[in-house]
Image (cartoon, rainbow, N blue to C red):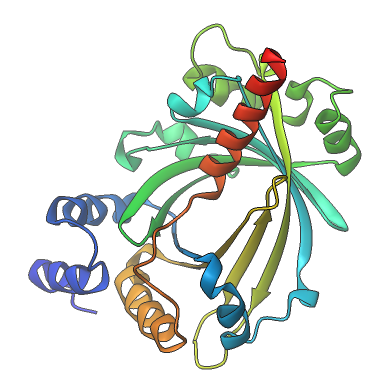
Length: 269
């Protein structure tokens, strides 16, 4: 990969063909301050079976998870760039997360960047990207289940450091224990290595309560590898018949809007 500014710009333009020049400039500025990059692609409903078959995915090797978000019925946190969630994992401890997005890595406090539980990641998908800062903490499954069921207060899932991050960025007057439980969403996560692709890939199937489903493919890489991995991934997925130009869905946005609408419906009935 070229190390010159012109070479990097040309390589970026080729790898991120669907981004505007301004977006390319922005992502080039963000990457040096990120800890990792996750490349994502959602698969249209009409292509799902062929993609699963073409990539050699065995769903029986997947791991079940449950994801819950915490927000107000009006999604006040999400509108302010704060995402609060917790996750149960089959046969393993789960975790809780406070996420800020978007962030500019160079503008984050050094003390926050030094925390072993905090990381900065660029999520990129066809046509867009977002840089986020995430603080993750392990959580006991029994406690997770109790909070999901409303039997324990929400703040019990979060460490002192997470609570401080939340209080610094959440809209004033909204405490963790004021938040509604949005979920759970049942998720099947599969890690696999497709034949002919040099990296591990992850597939996540999010099953929404109305019967809809989002299938997302992703892979992670170091920031310095981004353009090479994007180019390799585009070529590989394209050769397998994956529609790289299909409209993209976001798992979190879909989940938040679904459960917020459900809360609104319950309140009006």
